[in-house]
Length: 196
Image 1: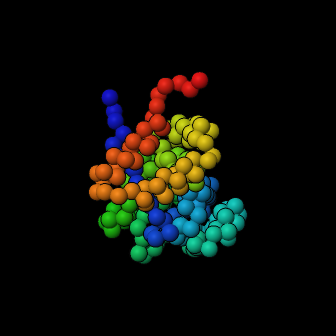
Image 2: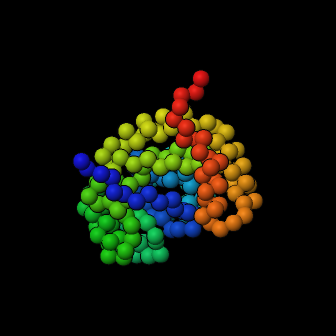
Image 3: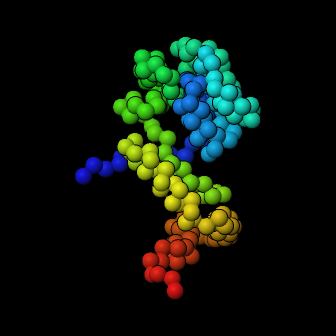
């Protein structure tokens, strides 16, 4: 049986430099997805022209810069991650190859073999964030799972997280003792007995 071996990671995109190459529908989708989760992400979007919707989205986020030019290799300088979503597969492949030479993680939209990472489904409720991956196989399944989790996770879960964080700060003892105490307190969360 095939297994998802992707390593989930939560990035502080306000501390990183992201390049998106492409100003069309897919570029808009990638930027929207990123800003929904990380509204202060440092992003430069490069394209000769942009959809008006992308321009208006960028205007609402001071940390997003639009550059009205064709891609050039020097645009990869001082980057941490790259997304290429032009309508030209040759350009996308070139961006991927240049990124790999510079040890940059890169995602070529809708081309799984040219992706170092995928942008999965994300559920956010306050401080709780859940990322969903289908190993690049079915974005639709990730979307449906996201919708499911958004519905079943209570809106006030953040209150529980804040309360547990405050309690954790009061605990004494070594790390192992603190973990044990937190495990005891949260044990009821995994209770599989149906509620009456």
